[in-house]
Length: 399
Ligand code: SOE
Image 1 (cartoon, helix red, strand yellow):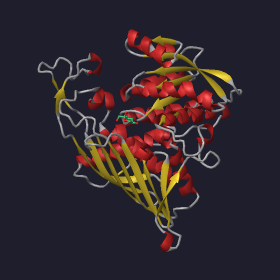
Image 2: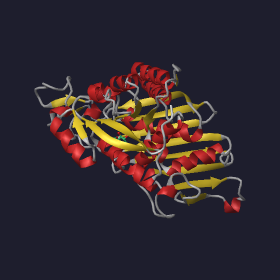
Image 3: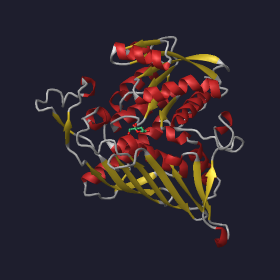
Image 4: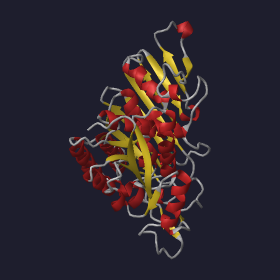
């Protein structure tokens, strides 16, 4: 099903916290920077509390606000549902939206359980036959330097891939007095650092290398097992509500480390932690191959380091490439002249540009819900490995 150029397309966004803010920025900006094939209409934002959602609508540029997502996803003036809620509600909302014939952009991770992720992937595949598109919001794929890294690998510039190393280091909960927010509650978040930030580095390394993780050996750790309950009831869960002492139990991992084997023969090492004191959002990866290697650090996100191993040893070493050349690097022609760098929020604009373009051109967006399911299966294998003395554990295939 293709839609005509510059046709308006109504958006309903469910959830308006950090990801809702990032997505709102992208919906506002995409048509003002890129020649989008469809003109997004920011029709309604839905949240749990009427007043805070109305305030968010006004601040972030939504025409309406509401508290009933079931009503929003069935409206005739809505064609895209953008899910920006915690993982516990992704499945219910996505299944309803797909059944209503809406295109769905769903934040990562796809869902908190394999069963739900499988159901979402199956529903998305069925809806795709009717021209309905769906995508998972792994936004870092849309960092120009990361898209460029994938191009280098695809063009054979790294040759045979031997090693993949990835990290995602944060430190926002090192303080034991940090409250028991929803990201630390299994029934809402599904898992801790593993699913929240580990999912990003699983997606990125598979995207850049084009390979898939086959088996893992992992360790999960919860450093601080109890925390003060948050003041706002919205952050409380059934389990923690009513706890007399004002202290709740942390039910997710604080850190995950795992080794991996890829189906292209490469070895992988992964670290995802919220206890790397001093590291705020240190996402990085390195890929080492027979003909060349790359290094990326999100804290210097406009740069990719590339080593061409075919150069004479006298010239060997990692070159610092500014990935800002509009004529040769992805997305950059729409922004600024070379060297005028972009930031975190631009990745969401690129993600939504690609989603709109795929809808308009009747192309299948990536990462798909099937890709999201496969990532959940990798995370599930890490959990099973950690529970089994870090035994090497096969990633199940349910696709
Ligand atoms: C919290 O760890 C978080 O907001 C993640 O949920 C996002 O996916 C990541 O991009 C930034 O950190």
